Length: 269
Image (tube, rainbow, N blue to C red; front, side):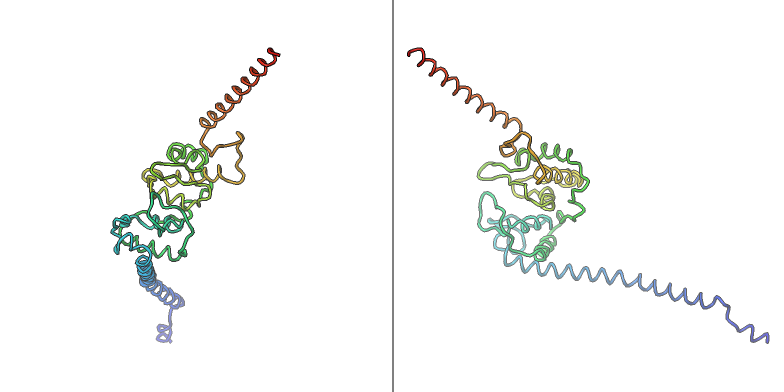
């Protein structure tokens, strides 16, 4: 009887075996699952780059060169990053219809999936600004007042005080920002398209970009009001005051001339 009782398993032995099995299974998953996911992501990225290269060869290489090195008809794309591609192609500016002082916005000819593939290929040519996520450009809870101050100090010289655009030199212009999406405003600040300077996060942090986006949405939104009446393209209080002064003074002069003329006629009669 003693020998038989010695051979009996401890009541907790089954639990220990089960825990060891689970630990081993978890260890195998931890060892192989992340590697498998990383490999899948790498494969998907490689496929996106290959598809983007095909799209680039058809729609972009004639101006920017077969390897993105640039030519006399288009600048180099090495190092511009995926954000620049997303901005230029998502707004229809690229591919350009014809060379000129400035490439205008026009209807988009690519799907968002194709734009992402083009961006992946261009990004593979050299590191550059990355396409922002929604969390980066979402202006919720942003400081509108600070955004207005930042915009007036950094942007109003070209886009005027409310972002309605303005003329520059040699046929160039600052576009109207009224209907531009938050994503594209953020990308424009990241990349500095055409005549615009760039504002990387080292110069203008993400929060300040959000503040500017919130300001533009506020002053150009449907609920925005202008207590001054005619806003004259949002050129600001100095130009509006000058406009009012000149026309008011001109009206007063006209009235004075009319009164003087009629007074002279009355005296003669």
